[in-house]
Amino acid sequence: MKRVILSAAAVAAALIVGCGSQVVEFADPAGNDAGPPPRLAPEPGDDGGATGCVDQNCPPGQACRNDVCTVIDPCEGVTCPDGTTCVQGACVSTDPCAGVTCPEGDKCENGTCVSTDPCAGVTCPEGSVCQNGTCVSTDPCSGVTCPEGTTCKEGTCVSTDPCDGVTCPEGATCFNGTCLTPDPCSNVSCDGGLCVNGQCVPTDPCAGVTCPEGSVCQGGTCVSTDPCAGVTCPEGSVCQGGTCVSTDPCSGVTCPEGSVCQGGQCVSTDPCSGVTCPEGSVCQNGTCVSTDPCAGVQCPEGSVCQNGSCVSTDPCSGVVCPEGRVCKNGACVCSGEHPPKPNTCKNGKVLICHFPPGNHSNKHNICVDWHSIKAHLRKGDKLGSCAQY
Image 1 (tube, rainbow, N blue to C red):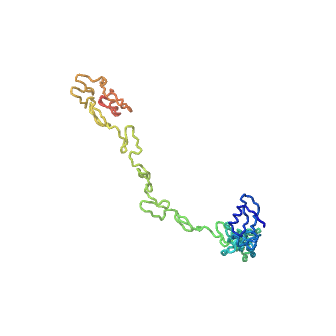
Image 2: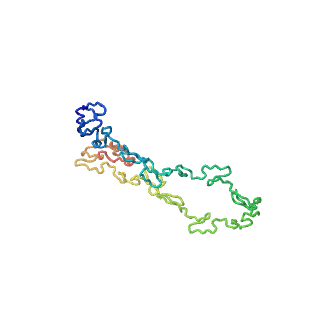
Image 3: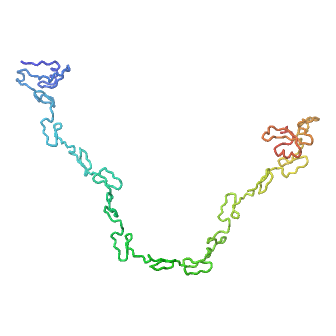
């Protein structure tokens, strides 16, 4: 009896597959490929002495080949007609367009419907159209070369002479495509006239017309040379050059604010416009008047004008001293005393408080003549001692 010795792992795998079946390509547990595994041969006398594998005992998708369970090709033994091939045991068409239905005007290519119009998707520039997939000009004369003296019209070369093919009657000639008869005045020269049908006639309608004084002939009729003849103008206007114009010189004159038109000229309504007054005076109603409030004011002796009013030149005028004191030269002093010397003026001069221009805080007493008091008061100085101010 011949026996085959297997490893323990191989025997275990065979037992798992099933009794009476063979499995191909067992892997060596040690990782060594020792070739196809040995077939399990039954002992003589087992199963009536029969040997080999049975298809029914192989796993699904396998069959006995060379007495071994082997994975089989589902297309094995399948014969397909032309244009088809076996896929997973079934014959299918090799044409990718099989079963594809395309709309009218399209066809199937590689399983996709494409347009049969060669101009589909073609955009042509203005003046051309697509024909068989190519843009061609819509001008029938495009590419047409005509001989000299001709031009292309609608794709055909025609003569450029408008008289070509024109037949004129006797005595007439063709000009620019039109038959013309000879001009009877073509050889006639008129002096101061016009040729009509071969005859000279005067062109001046006033020829032979004599007009009275003050008129001339126009178009054969005598008309007045006065443009205002026959023109009637409304009141307040006269005719000038045939047109009625206003006799008012200010008619149509627009003056700016603050002025009116006089004799056709805009003049200011301000009576002081153009009036220049000397220093210390201003214009009022067209007349220069002094800005000095004391101008024209006559004050009695012992007083002067200040801001338009007469005020006393006595430095003690208006000074009220406390009891036991009297005013002397604008200062309150004890009875019998004299005022401070700085406040005393001699030689008939008058004491005033002087405020220097631009520096009024530096006021101080000064003595001035009677004649200059008015000028000092006008500049802001005050009568009396600065002690009062």
